[in-house]
Length: 222
Image 1 (cartoon, one colour):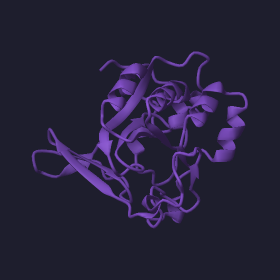
Image 2: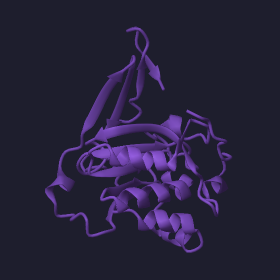
Image 3: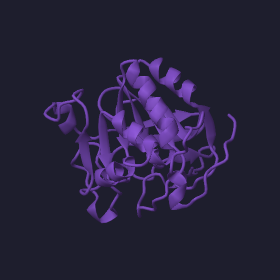
Image 4: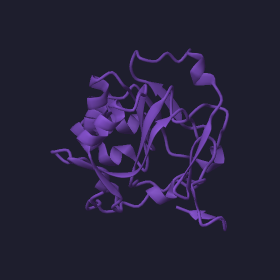
């Protein structure tokens, strides 16, 4: 994978550019998961977040540091070839790369997939930002579902599906999903995958559980 120049690790760095980037700075991808939203989903974790929520489940994804540079068009094609219901955008902070992710979201939605976003911003913050940030407006407009709000460790909950803390809200932004559907009241799931000596964990309610296995001698955070 190519490297990309990461934006500065400052609150202003998350603003989208007038011309969305052709590549995205990606921390991780799970091509098919049932733990990051309704149905089978292609999950994309972006690298970089301007927030520093105590107890963040992905602290290694906070710095605006180069990871894997993946073209927008490649992400769209991979998602659409994955035999999934939709795409979930996580991080890191998806709205820190709003321009490129808007193109991804619009592209997969045009081909029949749904879009779910997990963001640390509140809906009120996003709507205010969308007034003068076209990238944020487009990304928000392309979402079917959105979980908003910073993670609050003192408000941690495991009883609401796909929700980390009580202050967070799951917003239904299109007619694609019905909040009365039983799948939105199901149990949270955790998935484990072992590949090339690396154990990855995704889903809820585990936090900070990614581990690398070192020849069977224990793990370390990755």
